[in-house]
Length: 193
Ligand code: SF4
Image (cartoon, rainbow, N blue to C red; front, side, top):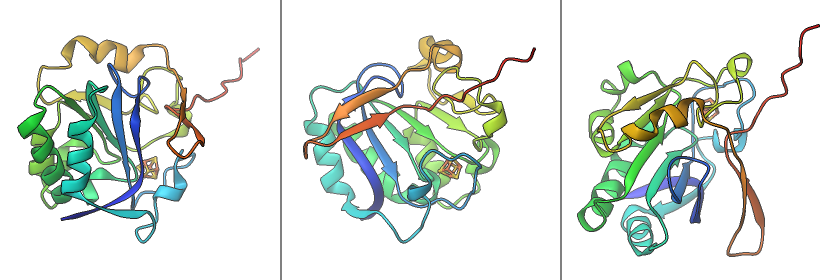
């Protein structure tokens, strides 16, 4: 099975959830949030195609990671492929926690094709569209309308930090020598006089 991917970070990052996390940004999103940090990831025909078994094998071999974060783009447009990949990883690396971002509200994910299957693969789902005016520069959700939803209890001790903790960004040196900035961007908030 194939997955359309915008980018992956196999080096891992500490700024998109607890511990060092392998990150997959999927390609394709139907929403048009103002101020979207990755507008290039929205087109449905862009990105690169990766075989889910190959991606799972790469994650399984990454011995420096504590978890996986899936962002986008919209992960729930490719639920079947992602669930397939995460199921494969879980067989060998069940200790890896999974955080999934989605621009949809949690309540409708069940009704999306194979949405239930992907929900079952997650420990935490961060839901809702990005609303620029509600970006309060806190936590790893982009704006305060987005909820940090526990699917399992495995990341419960980090929920408050994910919601309200100090927001961080990191720069990661990629295998090709390029440096990429990773993390939820902050918004300049002007102080009222
Ligand atoms: S849901 Fe995410 S990727 Fe899609 S437009 Fe909104 S911020 Fe961008």
